[in-house]
Length: 247
Image: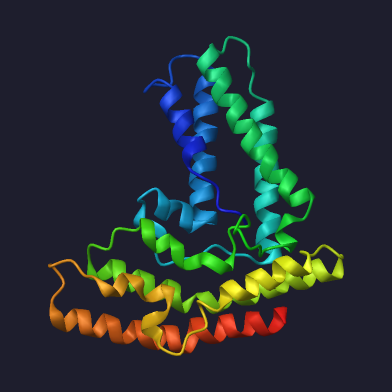
């Protein structure tokens, strides 16, 4: 469930030429890169948001165990497909691309094998979990009413992610795969920023403190009102429930 930097893919694209060339192996490699990258954007919409791709801006990843297992299965299939592509004739740049891509897939499979998903919270947010979901707003360009509506949709979806997080924590408890107590204490301390009495103090409210000139006063007021309700009725109760679970 960790959000991976798109830099791996960007590096791959920077190292390659703009055309696939005649070699079948290169064509197949690039096709596999493209298909896998697109799948990863769907699986974790935050990655798409980081890339400036707004197609999934109203969505969060699915952190159910079934989804995590399906992603691991897809990554294993991609790795298998990669290993079936001949490396004969690949130039040095393409070999580097392939090595980077293979390492990325293997790292993801290792994380699944060692059940990293059963430890979805940590004080440094290495897990990319629920603790700092709001931070993705910092890389989104809020240029239109639709952008704000998408963010409200994400606010309303926080409770589902928190429920999924708790379910993963229960799996970890079942398998004795848990974070040390001192880390959980720090996580609970950080959760205080999310459990607020005034919605305007929520980190999720930050985008509504500033609007582009193209959005008029009436629309601003409406968006702010809806956001406040969503925070009050969804995110605050969700994080309060998470804190109670960790207590």
